[in-house]
Length: 549
Image 1 (tube, rainbow, N blue to C red):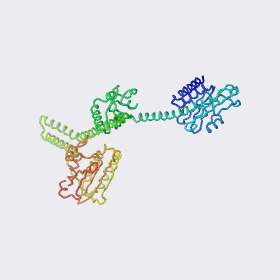
Image 2 (image 1 turned 90 degrees about the vertical axis):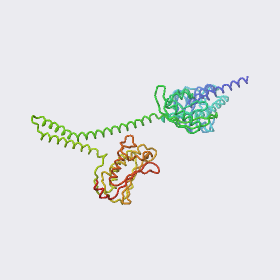
Image 3 (image 1 turned 120 degrees about the vertical axis):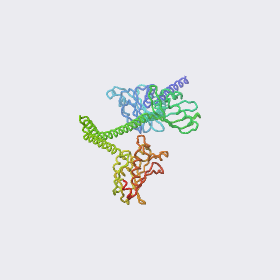
Image 4 (image 1 turned 60 degrees about the horizontal axis):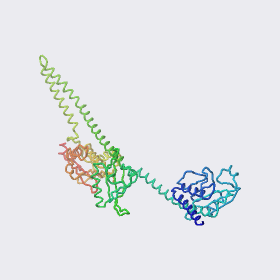
């Protein structure tokens, strides 16, 4: 009979342990502990309080504030409860199991108006101890006329309290893990990137929830057969991706590849996958890494490219419109004169007695107006034709500074840092100031264009001057893309350009202007990045050159 009682007792303890240990939250463990404690002890009321640093909650709180790590569970659930001072002292601080028989104080779990109706009360208060720290209290109330808190009952409650203390520690670890996982998931969602592992032997692919979203895969299927992943790759990008994977697997080298994925609804996403190889616990080689959704970035880049193209097209149309307007305005008058005089000539000849003198005069005026129109057209083409130079004494440093001042806003807007090194000993030279400033402006614009697409290093434009051997030199250097070797022999050819929207006239005109001054212009390769253009002019012009111009 005694063995049966012991077996029944052990079975009850085991069942209570299972009820407590299966919970994974603070509130769940506290509720399970209070439930089995009331059931097995015969108590009529009770509470479980958890603490941090010995500070206990004074009122019931149905929610669990993770940031404070405190919870209180009571039965009846709508009670107000404050741990009696003597319990707090003996249980919390001394870690004693405390039993009190008292009628005068009444229940600590009933409203004050109901306490006087209660009979004698027996209170059991046990500490919840983990690693020598009191992490909470189990508080029970029973009716005095019942032999409730016997030595066996107290022993069983102590066992339950010990199991609960361990379960609270497990719940704390689980809660920390859950919170860490939650923040990791949120971080991946915000960054639009997900983590993955691909087993190169089994060809099974595993990924985070965000990775499944990016690739359009069912989040409930994990691991994923590689074929399901393969089916999401854009057909135009699949061969290159498979080749990149094969090369990475064969060399065990870091993997990086950009491709497109297509979801079931037809939506296309741009992604970049990076990874490195690792050996799994089973000994298989696995590729682990991150897949990033760069669709919005690609869209923004395309929008910027389209905007630039539209701006360039608009600028070209505006230039054509301005040129057309100038031609119409300037040529309209001589054309009108030509028509008027031609009509007059016909009228003079159509008379009964043709007036040949007047007709001749009208024809001469037609010729005059035609020549006037020809001069207008020639004037509009001065940018591509040799123009007479107006030589004068100029300070070339001042000419350079004026162009840099005009270009300063454009350089700042494109993130270009301007550096100057102008020789203070530069003498005045004989030159056409306007024409030389056209050359300087063209070199500055070319340098700025060469640095427009540069990222990852400083954009620097350096302008300098020097004088030696009777020649003044101006140099413009940049840290841009540089000049392809194949382009160098043709840089100064007319209609040759390295720009998508260029006309191929800037450097050609610059060379003509410099040559007209008796100088020369050339390209120098930088030792690191970019290109350097220099032109040199004689300080004094020869009389023959001045007369020819």
